[in-house]
Amino acid sequence: MIKPTPNKKSAADDGVLQVEIPAQPRKEPRQARSIALVSAVKQTALQIIDSEGREALNAVRLSEDSGVAISSIYEYFPTMEALIAAIFDDYRTEAHAELFASIIALPPEATLYDGILLALRVVLASHYKKTLLDPVFSVRSTHYDELVRLDVVKAKQLWPATASSALMKRFANEISVKNREKAEFLVYQTMSALTRAILLEKPAYLTDADTPRLMARMLHGMLIDSSI
Image (cartoon, rainbow, N blue to C red; front, side, top):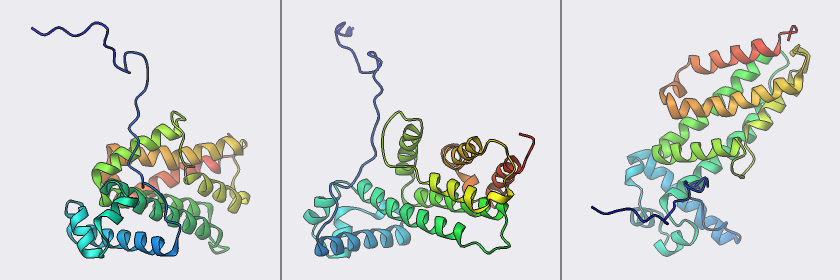
C-alpha cells in the first residue's frame, strides 16, 4: 500500500482558493494589418462554428479557410478557447452598446416594463449565444464571471451595470420605490446573477419566451411599489 507523503499539502489544505481563469487572447492587435488579420480569423471561426459546430473548429481548418498561417493565429490566440473568448467579448461589447442605445431611444410611449423586458431579452440572448459558441467554455467562463461578481477575483466591469442605470434614469418618473439605490442594486444583481444561474442550472430557460417576461414582472413590481 502506498502511503501519502505527510508533508505534502495542496493549496486547498492551506485555505487557498484556486481559480481557473478562462483562456484569453495572447495580445491585442495594434497595426492595421494585424487588426485585419485578427478580424479575418474571428469571422472565419464564426462561419465554421455556424455551419458545422464548435467541434469542427481547429487551428488547421481555421488556417486553411482564413488563409492565415497557423503561426500567426497562435501569435494572438494560444488556444481555440481563447479565440472563442475574444469572439464572445466582441459580441458582448456590441450588445452592451446596442442595449444602452436602445433603452435611451425607446419611444416616448414606452413604459418601464418595456425597458426592463428589452434589457432582459438582450442579456439572456447574450448568454445563449455563448452556449452556441462553445458549451464547455460557456460554463467555465460563467463560473468565473460569478467569482468576479462576488469580488473573489478582479476582472473587467460587469456589463449589465450600465443597463440597470440606464433603466433607472430613462424611466425615473415611473419608479416609486423609496430606496432607489437599493432598487438599482437589485435590478443589477437580477440581470447578472439570476441570468447566469439560468445558464448554469436551467439552460433551456434561456430561450423560453416567458423567461424574460416573468423576470420583468418581478422587477417591475418592485420598482413601482411605493410602499417599500
